[in-house]
Length: 303
Image 1 (cartoon, rainbow, N blue to C red):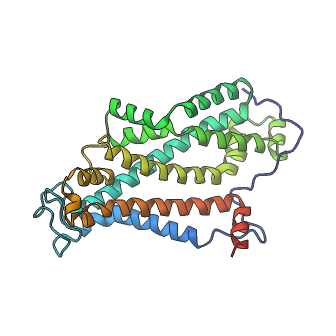
Image 2 (cartoon, rainbow, N blue to C red):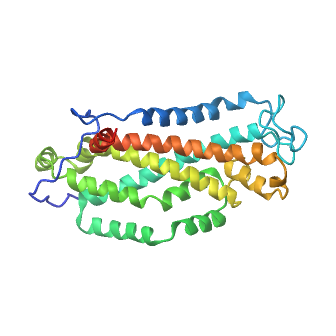
Image 3 (tube, rainbow, N blue to C red):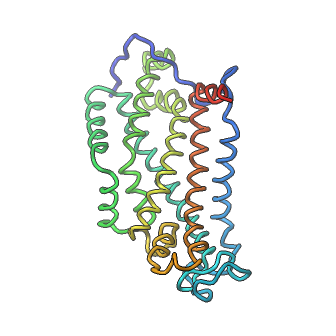
């Protein structure tokens, strides 16, 4: 199938993914380095963290509700499980879901957006009506219902998040493709008989790579939040310890706030979620400044 003939009116050019900002546009500032450092720290914790503690996350490692000390750096919970071991295990779970759900969301959104924007016509109309249907559906209740029906596991949870949150990425990609297909070199390639797969892979996809990167960062942060929420509701993977499950276990302990245990049991997963989301958000802001240099100029003018 060949794309419908483009209009003659030229659309505003989209910055090339590999181009560098021009004079005065600025570069992503320290906020990008801060965000990247936070995310890298959590990745390092998830990979090398198990070497920091000799305890298994579900092991009854000590006296229940032990305060932080030499044997248990973050203390123990109500059944004697090591909080640090659970926090490290939860780091791996959150990063795994962020990666799987983020990539899945962008893969579905990019495929639908590229197809709709390039071929147009009935293909575009049908795909956009499907997007509208997903956008009108309450996604969080749908996510909870599907998660409860299908069964909890990290791949399933990641797939459910990707399936329910891809439409916005599809719309963004479609709008960029509609603009890019008006550019002279794309029109020339089509005029010379280049296949659609060649034009999309050679000329269109590289141009939207930064937009996809920004969408990936946003999807990853959303996945971390949703996984923690599902685990807090008891819909997470029961075979894995996650930050949301730690929060649920802490809140289920009736005397939590009557003791000092909340300081080393409840706060660590809350702080971990906040820091990881902050890091992902900062990385997303830096990528958005790269995509739209006007954001960087505006930020610099306020200093």
